[in-house]
Length: 107
Length: 123
Figure 1 (cartoon, chains in turn red, purple):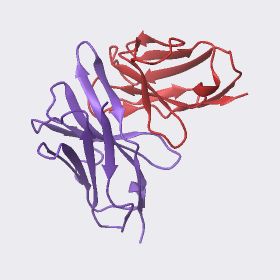
Figure 2 (tube, each protein chain N blue to C red; figure 1 turned 180 degrees about the vertical axis):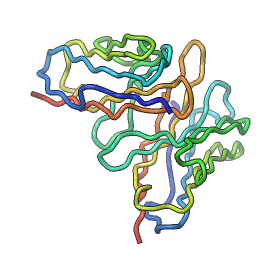
Figure 3 (cartoon, rainbow over the protein chains, first blue to last red; figure 1 turned 90 degrees about the vertical axis):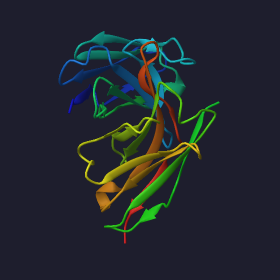
Figure 4 (tube, rainbow over the protein chains, first blue to last red; figure 1 turned 30 degrees about the vertical axis):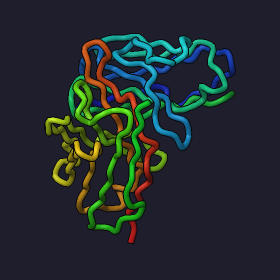
């Protein structure tokens, strides 16, 4: 299985800050990397697919980059509604695997 | 608007079989370029992919669960289902069904999720 490791596990940010979340795969996954946002008690929501493509309806303050084994999710000017957990997920091979999550909290 | 809805018992006894169904509206489980998936999340933990099925019957399971899992699709009811046998407390989780996109132009990702259903394994 491909192991996905996110860092940090949690972070505190103020509204308006730039937030960076990293995701590393245990082997190359090309650009088959997706990002999801999950709020408490809700299902995950797809934000970014194929490393850097924004899902329809997702605000442009979210962006993704990377390739191979190292990937990054950036939230430019984080908003109150962005405080949630974020998960990366590889879709290169099965079994599909997720990172352990990063919780973004209000400072 | 595509919607997925899980249904099934919220409480299952140890050693018994967990059975869930996902009803799909706004799309067909026979659609090309989509696969139909089950994903679970234990309380306060991360996400674990269980497996997925194409309408044609092609199936992939997580090797960690493969010996206990069966996923099937019923095109006449526009549903797909999950069975997990010999459950233990470790199988207690929120179970999600999700639509998996599989497209050169739109990527491979879980783009539509059900709201999730909590299943507790306890006697």
